[in-house]
Amino acid sequence: MLSLAEGPAASLWVGTYADGLIELRQGLVTRHFNANNGLPANEVRAVMPLADGTVWVGTALGASRIEGGNITTYGREDGLPSPFIMALYQGPDGAVFIGSGAGVAILRNDRLQALNLSAFDNADYAFGFGGFSCWDPMDDNGSWFSCL
Image (cartoon, rainbow, N blue to C red; front, side, top):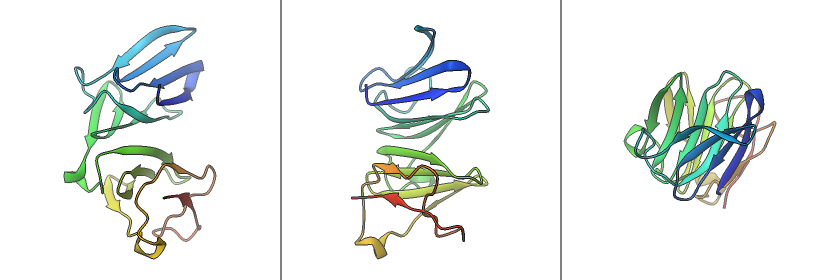
């Protein structure tokens, strides 16, 4: 197990090293996503279920949004600094922060933009984001996240 998150309606989402993403309810597998049915890879390093039922998944080969049975995947060709995703966070305005092995990108209003982290000693790896405030240079509210 690489990632774990509680979802709506008492669901538990489990990201695995080699078997994709598993949703559990009352200890039973209710859904299973992997490379055979739409995820870009079976290595799931981050999972972020939202209250509306959407689930964001960070894999070794991109970030995916599972919404209403459809899976949309974002990769380097879409603007991610790296397809190796390690962290996900949703800001107060609904923007999704995607932390990778080569920096951070923000998806806002269906527009993906990589952040320039050169002011932070060229920080690369984004392992996680700070819960209630997350640094966003495109927003005046002020935010932060942790990078190495």
